[in-house]
Length: 573
Image (tube, one colour):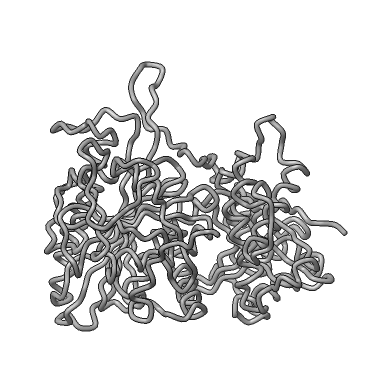
C-alpha cells in the first residue's frame, strides 16, 4: 500500500487570502493582470528571461497582492522550465535559532497540494538519502547548510511562506516542488549558506518573503521604506528587522549576491564566481494605497491620509547571468540565461538543433504543446514524454522569448482565445499558459470540460513585435513659382482615414489604444480579416471591442495604432 504524504494544512486561508478555490483563483488572476500590465509598461528596461530570485511581500492579498504580482508576472517567464521554488520567510509566531524546514512532505492550499523537495532538505542537512526528518534535528557538522534545522512548531501557523504558494501554484502549475524555510535568528552568512546549498540551476527559483516597515504613519513609512529599498538595491546590508520583518531572509540573499555562490567564498571581498547578478526594484506600495503600486522610478500615488498607520511593501527581482571571457580575456556578463534568451527583437529564435527554420514542424510542436497543456489542466492521462514540460525540454527553440495567442474552436465556433502582444517569457511557457487560459479563463465562455476536449480544434499564433503604423504624406511649399513638392513627411497615422488606407487586409494584426483617458485597448489577429475583409468594418469592430464607439472618427492622433504580423498554425480535420 502506498504511504500517504505528511501534509501541512493551510493555516491562513480565509484570513490572508480566500479559502474558496474559485474566489482565490479570481483574485490571483486579477492581480496577475495588474502585474502584467505594469511589467509590460517597463518593457525593455528589464532583462530578458525569468528572474532567478525575487523579494515579495507576504501580507493579506488585498493589501500586498498587487505588489507581489509584479514579481510573479516575471517569474511566469519560467513556466515549463522551473520545477522548484525555495521559499524563505521570517518567523512571526515561534522564534528559532537558525533556518527551519518542516517535516511535512507537502503543503496544502485551496488550489491543491504542493510537494516538498525533502531530498534537497536532506542533502542540505548533510543527512543520508533515506534518513527520516524529525522535528528538533540539526544539520550534520559538515553539512552544506550548517544553520539549517528541522522545526515543525515555527511552520504550524506561519503565514510568510504559505501566502506565496498559491501564486507559485498558479505560475508554475502542478509539477512544482517547494522548499519551505523560516529564517529565525541567523547571520546573513548563515542564511546565505542555506540559499547556496539549495540554489540549483534554471529549474530553481528563490522566493524571499518580506514586508517592510510596520505601522508608522503613511508619510513616515514611505520615507523609511524608500531608505530600505535604496539599501537593498545597492546591496547595502544588513537590513535591520525594524525596517523589514523578513530582514533575515533578505540579508541572506544579499550575502549571496555580494559574496557569490561558492560556499568557501567567505572572504571580505566578492567571490570569483562564474556568474553575475542584476538586482532590480519592480514596485512599492503600502497597505494604505488600496492595491495601487508605484513602479520603479515612478512617483507614489497621492496619500489619502498621511497619518494612517500602514505596512510597507516592495517587489524586487534578481537575474543571474553567466560570465564569459571576451577575446581579450576580460570578463563580461552574457545576457543569455540558462533558460534561453530573446533576440534583438525580443522574439524566439525558432531553430531546432538541426538548424531547421520555423516551418510546419514548429507548428506541429506548438499545436501538440497547446493540446498537452489543456490535457494536463483537465487532468487527462498522458505519458510523461507527452506532457508540456517534456515537450518544451525536447525543443530548445521554445526557450526563446515569444508572444502568442491560442484560439480554440468547436464546430467552427469560437470557444476561447487568450494571448499577449508582449514577448516577455519563453515561447513554450507562453503557449502552454495561454492554452490553459483559453480553455478556462476566457470571460466570454464557460470553462472547457474533459468531455468537450475531443471536440476542440486548436490554433496557435506566434506574433511579431507590434510596430507603430506610419504613413508618408507629401509636403507642399509655396514659392515664387507657386506650390512645389518638398521632402515627404513620414509620421504615425493621425486619423481614422489614414489608418484605413494604410492597413493591409489579411496581413496586419491591429492594436488600437486610447491615449490618456481610460486607456482602453484591444487587438484583432490577422485571422479576423476572414470575417471582416473591409478595413472600415475591421476598425469599427475593433473599436467596439475596446469599448469605444464603432463610428469614432479621429484626426488628431488620439488613438495609437500598431500593426504586427502573425505566423498561425491551425489543426485541420
